[in-house]
Length: 485
Ligand code: FRU
Image (cartoon, rainbow, N blue to C red; front, side, top):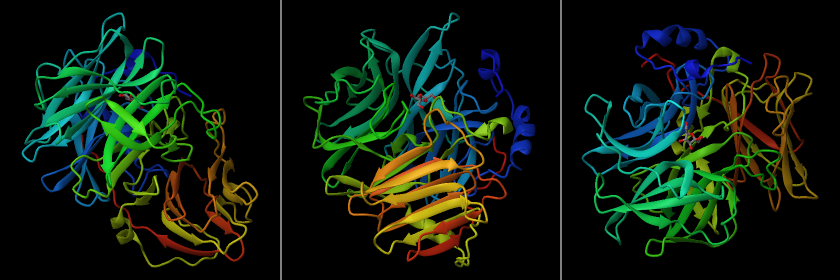
């Protein structure tokens, strides 16, 4: 693994030419994605600034241009008309002010109909590397570049640690106010969310208080990327708790959970109606964000990073890694989120491939179980051995997903086997397979499972248990791997 010096990681990008060669090098990788947003070069991590504005969906991702490493972060901009075909639009925001001198960190977007506003964390560091996070704002300029406000909306509080970031902006009509949720860590090193309020988008922000979430006072050491949405009359709060292990998540200390309940902006209390639930049960899913400016009150739109902090992926030696999930539509059913890939995805389907045990490298697999046992093994060798296996354990009502059989193994320290609870058994599985990822939607989206996977040339086969019916659609590409910076 390459060792990066701080200087290399935090190098400022002055011109597109500096990374053109890198793009040419990676574009030929067998793992470049065909229907997932991926970094133009280097590393992509959290989705940022996701929302609908003036007829177009906007999305940004945390971007480090230089390689598969977390360093100086930019916002890279992509746009789409249908949440499926994404166009590279170039660097959306540069870290070029005092307040964000060491990175434009994560944040969210909000359209007032006229302008698209971007709210982000300016990651300031002094010479001695002391960090001061500022909550900053910008608007999308006519040339597609962010026009930043000269001053931050507010700075950090000194009664919390330096970990205060990832503004999520919402408008609450009943209060006639905007609120910003900030992911934070208190001085006892517990994860928290902080709330700020204002009657106006770009000024007058004041600290409202800490978000109270009864029962979650001791739940991880930092809550990254808090986000909230209203679906079918309920509030859904998501965040990525860190520095803690959670049952069912192996050795991982990075998670993404959701709570269904009600948010009271008078008392700043989110009252959950049940326990926490995993947004996704997979190995590599983090920093999910709901899209802003969605008009359907019964549906939310979500995207996340396929990857985890502090983890390492097989394309690192090629100097790039990370991608976004496929955009998901979320509905609420009996207090749980039901997730499905954005509807437009079906338009990528080619004529079904023969179900002869070979797996196209970019495809969608639909499997209908026949009741009883269920095994579906992806990326096996031609003789059916190895692979990324999904086995239903009927005694425990869990789907056991095991990636130990792959030739390219990674993040073994975090764990290579995870389980998805499927009370009542597996009825169906829908798998989206791109060149370095797999997303499973189990039982019509009642559970989702996302993972990176790096099959070798020999690993393009599958096996399925008897009785189960499989349909395989090769998929057309929906992203263009062009060099736009
Ligand atoms: C989550 C995160 C955010 C931060 C960003 C920096 O992955 O750590 O909290 O804003 O990444 O890239």
